[in-house]
Length: 135
Image 1 (spheres, helix red, strand yellow):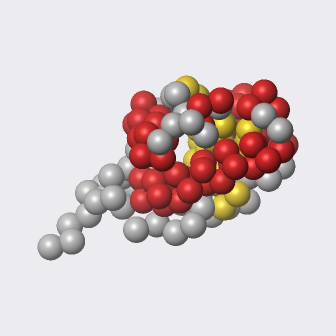
Image 2 (tube, rainbow, N blue to C red):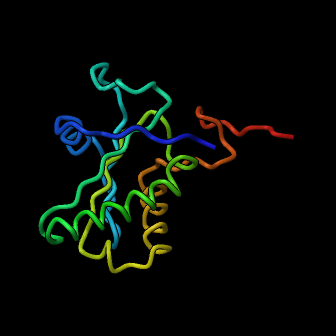
């Protein structure tokens, strides 16, 4: 099982993921993923994941956006530590349906996005993607 991911906080980091990464839009969220290849972006150890959250004003006022971010953080805490591929940066973007979707569906959206973007790691794999023999 993984540990808590680090947070993306600088605008430059978000823009790098948007510019160089891939994205998958699901009903409840958009997930962007980018490999960390630039040494300047390696503030986190190579095997760690970094995650940023954003919700635009189109979704609603500050209270609504904060609630959407909290739901996204809860979904990320459930899925990413064990299933996100290491050494990558992720940006989770809230959408209008982020608050309306049942939480299980939101978690499913995140899992689907990870799989579609090739960033899914089975819990039985080590950081290198090799199967672990726990027997």
